[in-house]
Image (cartoon, rainbow, N blue to C red):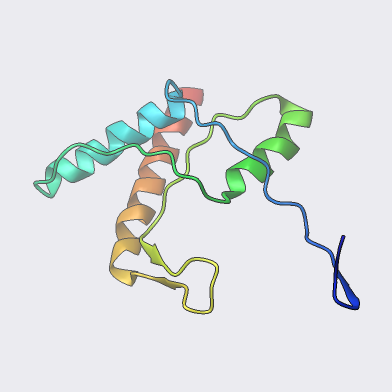
Length: 114
């Protein structure tokens, strides 16, 4: 807690960090499925980026690791502007592509487990 004037401010803990795994099997599956989708649209290769942001992956990974061990995770989604502000918005036109990608990745992962 920090004292400011006559009051005290308590800041909640930040999301824990998440170290992406560039050799992740889930990442490879995701890239392959996205590459197929981009090829159908006449696009290029998927771009994999690591950004500095508060992602739920760190929070979920930390909780699950205590029970199951490390999780293999990726983070992706539609285009968002003004994140975590009153101006936060999603570009609705980008949602269907990511929904389709999610279904394709989950389908491939289910096939691998079968």
